[in-house]
Image (cartoon, rainbow, N blue to C red; front, side, top):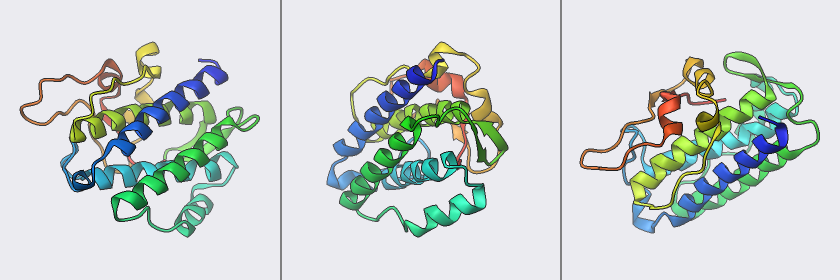
Length: 196
């Protein structure tokens, strides 16, 4: 996928997650999600953390140096309003980092080693789509999911599945009693890694 098209897909996926974050009602932040270990607040906090890493990694920092930068930002926030603000800031920063000139031309240091920046962006798109589904399912958000690289390229999830480290879960899991089915993008991923 061309860099401009991939960046556009990222922004569309990010907007879908943002819609869901802004749709969370005050009493839903402690609701469970399809990932049994995460509440809605945990899920949003996870994406805040993921997107805080993008700028430092795309700027060429290694994992240790990027971790210091992200740690300086402090926790994502405990209550709903703080999490919404933290997400909006992290989303804006990652969007800016991925849209920067030549942002996708190099490599980034991620958990499994150096990876092409475009591949890292594909993984971020998949992560956004999977977690938009998770969040939408948890809060009963009816909006559709955007198409992602998993729909265009059946092997797009292989790097995510292979990443290993961190917590993994089945992307296609749905709570008991739910009749909706995960999208083809979710099925393409299989399991999703946690951390850059």
